Image (cartoon, rainbow, N blue to C red; front, side, top):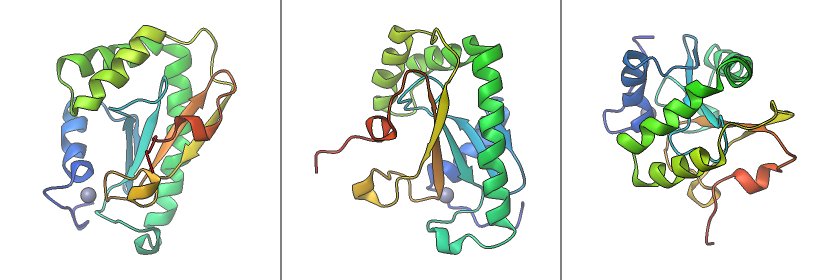
Length: 165
Ligand SMILES: [Zn+2]
């Protein structure tokens, strides 16, 4: 939506056009977009990001709140489909992270996923997770939620960002 406020120095505001051009959007509607994480915690780890530059949940008003939850649900279906039908696309995405990493951490995250390979089973469940505040692991001050496919009983706490404090 053109009237949405955007921040030129925010990675989630600027990434949308780039990912769109690179065909890296997993799902989108008028209010949100989703993509595979460039710092994957596990195979298929994805992010759903609101399109306007909103930081807190309080700023998320109707109809944006409906669009966000719609994207949260539909990204789950889109991700389940790609993992089941074409997991190699996800592996290719990780291979490309080694060539052109958005962040240094992307390299080690991608290397780990490549080493582990395509999971032998389809996901048994999914977790959504929101890091709210720096100490909770939030690194981009733009409202977003993580989606983690679960293959072998991993709990959500083990896949959320690790912290020293
Ligand atoms: Zn932003």
